[in-house]
Image (cartoon, rainbow, N blue to C red):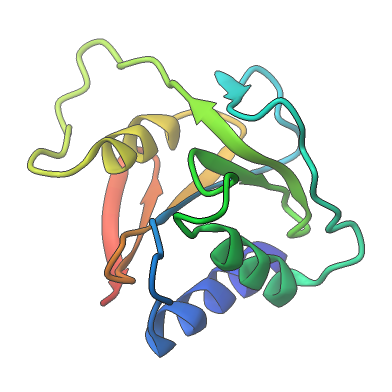
Length: 148
């Protein structure tokens, strides 16, 4: 599956160490299409062209814009099943599920958003890379650290 290749590329970059000024990264991996995901662009323009990039190149691009000096660093980015970058810098506001009893605590908003967002039907997982380069993945409401 191409998303596994994409995750591997993210982990490889993180293991090498994040660059100075790295702000963290949130990536929504989806099945088919964006559908009814509760997202909204943070920027008035997209300004990215990644149509012909492979998974590793997309991962490198996302790390390169996740810098305090780049206006595209904030929000979540959406990647398709075939590792195409569909959206960048999206405000992502998943509903808080009623009766959900596995909420993670003592984490930042990006992690909680990833946890709740991973419960959406068309979301396969959500990758979070913190400012230290630690990679976590959220699937079906469970957040797991995979690379430190």
